[in-house]
Length: 137
Image (cartoon, rainbow, N blue to C red; front, top):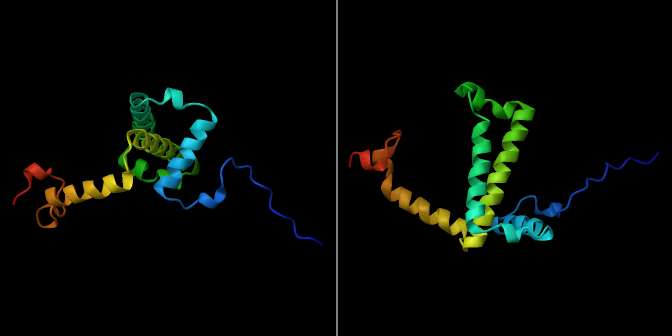
């Protein structure tokens, strides 16, 4: 008796990209966009507006819920799927914004973390939620 093969998944992109770099993810979303001729609608302003709309949908998942329920979103499959989808939407628009503006997100994050390290030295900020302008030191 022959072993049954699992059903083939229909996927519009190369599954070998499952663990990918930011550049590969950007290529993924721009290819999706370009296949549909949507670049014409993707001005920098429209992309920034869309990012904020998607971030609001992410925020909506927490509306009127107590903190303990929000913390357990990942334990509830439908809630986790909704959270995952909204996170993916936010990331997709962020990648499109960076692509449109010519920003290397990895370099930008590294530079921002260096600035943050200067504003929030471990010695004065450890365990504190205060803004850098309110820290002692």
